[in-house]
Length: 180
Image (cartoon, rainbow, N blue to C red):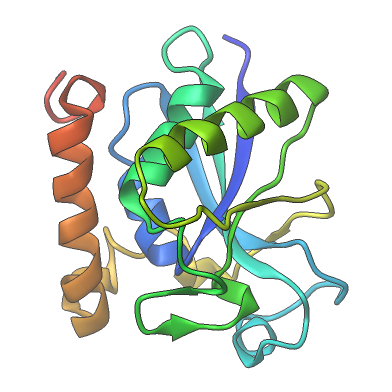
């Protein structure tokens, strides 16, 4: 099995990671930082908003089970791509909606996915397509956050379940728990 990767930003990485951990064909999800200028940034630095990095996820997937386009469509369905530099109460460029394609084919598919998302939204989609830069994994305590202490975190309890409901509603055939 050849694994491909999608790097996406759509707000808090705890919230986007929780969505993709339950998608058929996804074999790994890592929270981290990309798109900025600071080398080896920390969570505190990224949250301060002056590193240029976005909180992002690196989704490893089996292209025989799910396409890159499907990954992007799920991302668009589970965050608000019309909010510039924010998702809900999370405000700043570190919470921007962005796609970081690894190949020319991924770049073309990102453009197509933005067009599909725009067709589904009355407001302009502000998701950017950015050059793939260095990937910096987030600190260990951020990984698999929802499955760990995230269910004890009030912020996560307010934000993640609605995203998971959107996933289940729009992509029922793509849910691991529904296919096991």
